[in-house]
Image: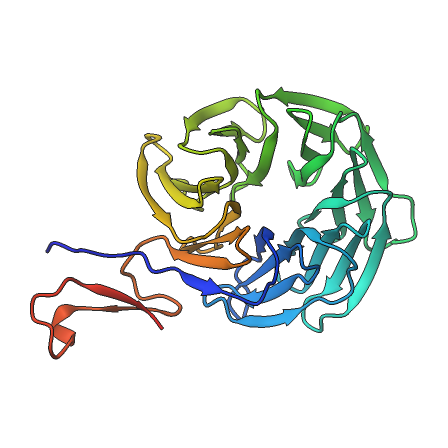
Length: 327
């Protein structure tokens, strides 16, 4: 059967400024959740498969640059231009901790057990705060020559990996506090992602996406893309990846061959962040245009708010192509 399917993204409005970062929880009892960072200072929580608004975390006094949800969607973390990294109860929306920095906090991330958060700031420092002992001095990692773009726990939370505006990605050993490995790029790395199975590090830089083995930091492959890319995400089954950047488009590539599968224009501004959902059924994008969009990984599947309609189910359309409706 020939199909003629059009990708119809779901548009999530509500933000008033550019949406700069996104994160999904794992799949929990009530589905999964999506959090967005926005320059309007009001990070939002949504139901992941539909984009329905759940709540807004209120308390930052400046643009929010980085967000994270823990695996169970019980805690959220946010980093902002008010020089704080905050941790929130994601169920009630109340602020639990506020960690003071000396400059803009660009990145936040939880460890596997939600016992610590890692922050990256324009101070060129990576810090780890213990949520059990919030008054304790944080672990501190210094050495980057530029503002930190992103920092994540890796290798069973024994290490931190960070990307900065000094064209490097660095690996830090939490036991010794030392930098143990460094990757250098021709352009500043814009985003880091660790695959669901914790084996592959995805780095977006310049017009390339490169993939690295998390345990050895050996390069697995590099794929050139048609635009300066801000963010990339690898599908949980590692067959495809998506990315977005300056030319407003969302791209999907075959991870195995490196070939472009498709591209979609939906945003009216550069794409700042892309992320696959934990089940891999959709990917989310955040843009300069102030919206988030949800895109189907397999166009034409009935999932979330997308309903797939076969021609014979439509009373008055005999030979029309299958259509996907986003209700």
